[in-house]
Image (cartoon, rainbow, N blue to C red):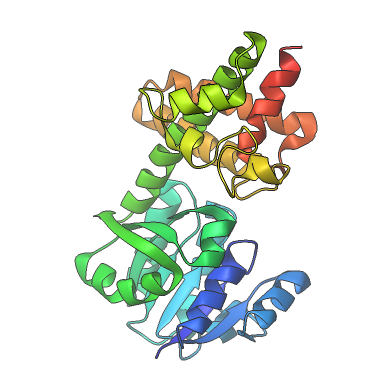
Length: 297
């Protein structure tokens, strides 16, 4: 089994590190937050004094951080992970960040003699805990083949999307589609309520007809329709509205940079911005239905 450094023990990182421990790997972890360190310790990881200390002797270094500036900061730290990890170590960044920052992290890793992957995830906290995440991976073929062992310990599926940054590109496109579809499902539900249609009738039709989508069949905003959905648990977050806003913002920024017309994506971004401002951003993103309902009173 391998020695793995894990940097970032938040809501996603801690259960991902726990699954690496369960797979038999020795995990040395670091986070700036005392509470996150406690979560990592409870997961069975050894807590290091710094990110650089965690990377000493590591075969693989996994990062799970909030934004591109944090990833680039950790990679570019003169006394950090790239200095202290053995030459040839594999670096896997599982954060969801902008494509330019992902590519910069790859360049920094390669300049230091390391292999690297960008591997953002889909599946939320539930998937991280259950080890059923999907990884969207960018990087060289050899790095991907080497990284599959570690990714399989944390998830159910890994898709090699292409060269450096391709994983992040796939993630923001996927989540733009998801954000749009959840907003559409929420509007359809509220319209159905106004027209006197029961939730069950709407679900039975849409889930088996041309309007069917993941937002209806897997994370349905109508409570009691799908076992385990956030709506059936008071919208306790598997993936928060704030995180959806972050991903939609990344998608819109990428669209602007590439001259792509993503009007629905931008509209969904504005909806989730208003949703978060309304105070519901820490709820699951499927609670958008509550925002639409309130606006429709």
